[in-house]
Image (spheres, rainbow, N blue to C red):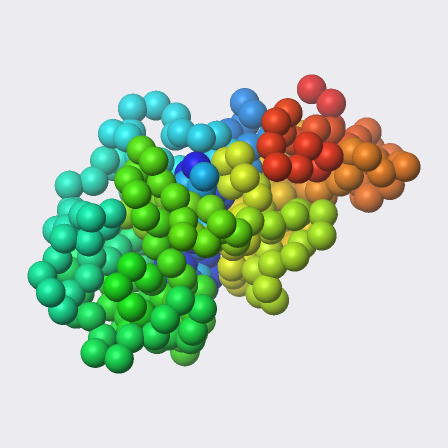
Length: 314
């Protein structure tokens, strides 16, 4: 599954949203800039520019200039660029900046293959063989990055990446996906593989319940393609009807979606509430119910068939 939102330099904490363009903020948790934009033709898709963190799943913001796309693939001929995570694909699509294979980890002994930004954009767009720390931090442990969240240099173990980096260049080591892009998987069954930034960012992010919002503090549960995954919430967030560029541009409990379906939205994409289709009154949480918004199914098939979003009728 591809994330399209939030990762912006998730390495830089200010990620925009699978959503999904991410802007690597000074925090290295860049919302993964998946380059996915909210698809206005799809009311369930989230249009967000996540410059930092967006992934394909089976999860600060660097201004990646991508928008969140709820679809599993990007529109048009993009050279196979996948959208998801926080951000999206590089503006020119495709990727010829691969020094190493992020899946095969084919660097020399003492090195690891890492995503990085090789053009100063603050968006992950390439891979590089980086030195492996002699005393690496393990998955789940605090970590530090050198320079910024998109430098490609951290002190995490082989097969892990420093994620959700803050403005002190500190984050948490997160497992990278294993397998292949065609058949990605994660060692921890409670996580799912999110792929973003033209395939150079591959992270195992926690699966979550958007109605419960059971992610760790600082993360929100957002729809990334066809799964709900925890992604860092970076920078300013918008409430209902507020414009969103990335998945994580919305307050926790809200989803970035096509602006045409959100009452009072003045942008291409705006935030709206998640709702429970099985509740006694599913529309009770819809703040714009008086304006015609109703709780509408979000995914016909999925892990949480009772989850909907408040939106205007077509």
